[in-house]
Length: 610
Image 1 (cartoon, rainbow, N blue to C red):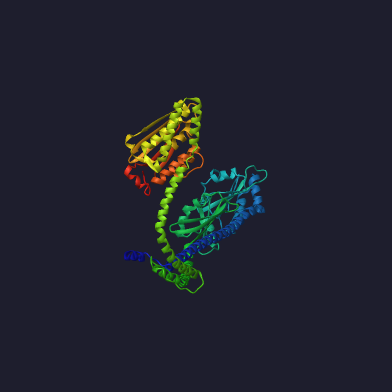
Image 2 (image 1 turned 120 degrees about the horizontal axis):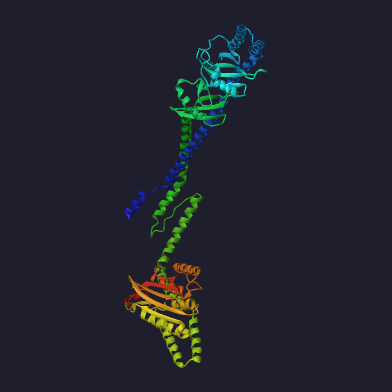
């Protein structure tokens, strides 16, 4: 007793401690869940804000560059409207005896004035079917043939007024500066082949212009071709790896978008947008450090939430202690209530749930003291009543066997008496007398198998007289089982079921077999017929009823009666099973323990087994 009490104390946990821990766990869970959700929400919100800011800055950068490019293109258009330029161009195209020296000087003046007013302009020259003219500020490359270049082929094949070329080191002039070529198409009426104004934009000047665009600290921009080749940018040296990732940025077909780059331990928010009137893309980049931004907020937020959770837990623990204290006192009083001590009383003044529990406990102790005495007095009485009830159930089940067989037999005797001579009637009466004698068995509940076989044999003899040659039967039981005892009248209901529900449905009659053997201390008796068998639905219903130990009021009553009697005598692991035969008919198998004569009293304790 002391060891059990010690073991119980080792595993005892008070309700107060369990509730306090549960509240602590819930508070920590809510704190962590809310903190994580808030962190994720702020992270997502800041990410969307950065995307929007990047999109706005990208739009502004594109607008600045667009206006600058538009200004350059408009100046190209205005050159064509210059009277001196137009007059000299017509002289070049239509006059054979023109003064080339005057024309070269005047064209150079017009082109150089345009170049002087536009910082992006590196060089400028005019190509016509009758010759080429420059601003004469930089010497032209004599080995360069514009008509053999890919730029000239694009100029002839395209119908647009502007033809943009790929950036290269200027091959037209000896300066070889990195430039982006642009040709402005000039159509003159009466001349089939167009003229072109070739303008080389200075990459360095464009990069300077991009670097001067106002943007947030750390941001930078670039301009690239459709293939992702950068020709003007303000990218810092530490972010040179971005040039290698531009193909990833421009892999989509959309004209604009936002994408995050993560490389070299850096996260860069990048956006692209196609520059109007050009085949170029404007790129905008912004170093993003969301984690660093959130870390500044995370620590104060974490401490505030943790402090709130701690305060809640402390107040909850105090409240739980005030509530569970009386319950712990009541539990200690309950432990004092033993098998003989029913005088303990617990006092509690408040009218709440604990007060209701206290009143119930006090009434329970008082009532239990009274009930325990009655239970001891009635214990033996209940045991005897249960045994008597079992005996009555066996007798009642046995008495419920339908007596229609007796009526059918007597009716058969009457008809046989009219049809045949008295010998057959005598034999039938003798068989019936044997049947009744074994039925009574001088009040015995269990009889030897030999007598049970005589009983069922008498029944089959009577049925043989009734049905004649259409009924045949065979009994094969091991001789070693003849002295074993079984509950009486267990085979006749099974044989009757086979005849009336199996063979009677066949026009040509059939055969009934009774087999008996021993299997590892168990008697196995089988009743087989070659009748019509059992329908699957009915067979399933019969199997379920036998398994559950039910007694049905309709089909197969005799089978259920025998099954229930065997289960009442020997236990639920014994009884009947039923199935259709492999070829025809049905097979009913009965299993029960092997009971010798001296063991009968074990199963019918309060009655004479003889």
